[in-house]
Length: 509
Image (cartoon, rainbow, N blue to C red; front, side, top):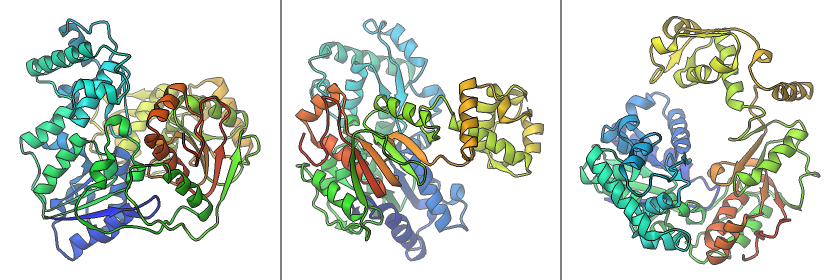
C-alpha cells in the first residue's frame, strides 16, 4: 500500500490538491472506478464542500451514484453497518430509559448538543470523561486527569456509570458513536475500495485513526491531508502526534493563496509558542494585508466587504451580536433570535417556487420546518404525503399535490416578534437585501475551520476556566488562535483583552 501525505499551513490548497490533482489522477490516469474510492472528511460541512468540489470537477458523473463513499466516518459506519440511528443509536429520549435502568445516575442530566462533526457533546462531566476515554483509548482515571476533572468529579462513580451503560447496551442492543466505529472494524464492514482520501486528518482521535488505518489496509493507495498546527479538537480526543509521526511519501503545500504578509507575520509569532509541531515551509500570499489592534468595535467600519467576527465561545459572542443589532447590521450566526436566517432562506425558496423554479428536497423541507409555523396562512398535509427524504428536485405543483403544501402571504405576515419586523424594515431602509447572504458572520473559531473571509475581527478574551486550562497547557489555545488569525485574506482586527483573563496574541500565556 502506498501512502501520500499532504501537509500544509492555512490557505495552501490542501483540499484543492487532494481533489484537483490526486483524485483526478486516480480517475483519469489510473482508471480507478469511482465506486472504489472513499473520500473521508471530519465534519458534515466538509463533506458537503467535498461533494460540491467533486461535482464541479466531474460534471458528467452523478455524485450519489458514482461517488457513494464521500462521507464522514460516522456516516460511513452507519451505512455499512445498516444502522437506523433513530432506533438503535443511544441518544435524546433514550437516555431516560438508561437512567431508569441504572441505580446510580437517575438524578443526572444527560443533556447534550451535536458538534460540527456530528458527535454529541455532553454537559454531564461523567459522560464527558467516558466519551474522552473511548476516543483516546485510555482509562477513565487518565481521561479525568487529562481533562482536569479528577478534582471535580467522583472518578469511581464515573466508572460505575460506564459499567451500567455497558450492561444496558448489551441488554437492549443500543449503541453509541464510538461503538459504531469499533463495530465497523471488528465486523469487517469496509466496502470494496482501491483508494481512500482523508482530509483534515489532524482532527481525528485515536479511535477514528484505528478505523482509518483499517480502511487504508484494504486499499492500494491512500492520500492524507492535514496541518498539525490546526489541531483544535483536542477536547474531543484529537491527537496531533499521530499525524506528525505518519510515515509515507510527503507532498507538502507551501504557498498560501489566502494569508497576506502582515497576517502571516502575526501567525508565525503564535507558532513560536507551540512546542510540539511539524516544521513546515510556509510562504504568504503576495499582498501586504493589515493588522489592527483595537479594544472596541466602535471604530471599525462594517459598511462594506465581507466579515468574520470570531471568539473563543458562544457566550463571548453575546455582546457582539447586541452591538451589530444596535447598528442595524445583519449578520449570520447559529444563535440569532432577532433575524432567523433559516426562516428567511425558507421564504426565499418559497418565492423561487412561485416563480416556477424547482428546488432540492432539503430546501423544500425548510419550508415545512420554518414557514409552516411562522406564517399565518399555511395549510399542510405533509404527514399524509410522500417523504422529501432522498428527493432531488421538486416544483410547486409537486409540493401541493404530493405533500399537501399551500402557503400565501408576505414576510410581513410572518408570525415573528414585532422587534424582528422593525429590525428587518430598518435593514431594508438601509438598502440591505434580506435575501442576500449576510456580509457578516459571527461565530466561534471552531465553527469556521477551513473557511476564509476578507476581514476578520478576533476577540482574545478568555473565560476563567479556559484561561486556567491554557496556563497549564497552552498549545491547544495557541493552535486555536492560530486558526482564527489565518482566516483572513486582507485585514485582521485583534481585539485587545479588557478582561482579567486574556490571551496575548504573539505572547506566551
